[in-house]
Amino acid sequence: MSGKDVYENLKKLNIELPEAPEKAGVYEPMKLFGENLAYISGCGPAIEGLPDIIGKVGEDVSLEEGQEAARRCILNILAVLDRDLGDLNKVKDFVKMLAFVASSNDFYKQPQVVNAASKLLVDIFGEDKCPARSAIGVNVLPGDISVEIELLIELDS
View (tube, one colour):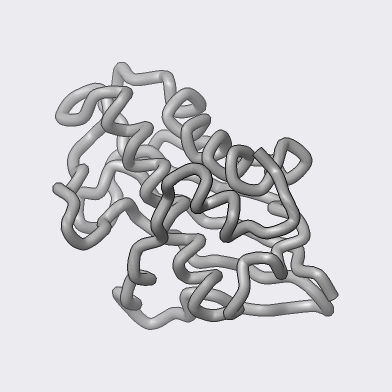
């Protein structure tokens, strides 16, 4: 689903953005650079009012729960963009996604976990906005979260 207004697409998809997550350390949630690029620091899946998704995918967390965690990471990223840019319609393209999936030693489906994040961006912004990406399995993530995602974004100039 793609259209001129991202907020209309969110409404059609029955998606409500959460409050942007608070900083959890010494870093900036969003950093503008160059003429029209933005880097969004890694966001986890914690959304107030929803149960936490913590632990390793393939051990404590199912593939489906990992996919839900990946979707929530994207919602948090969009909330940061909305707060810091003031308008999601300023997004021209999603350039690169880097996703970390806390995984058991015998779990090899990190790309399937992260597909849920990519699909959510495509559903909201359109197929042509699908980013290049890496899906990396890691031993642990901060706070025992299951997924953390960062994005590099091109903005309209």
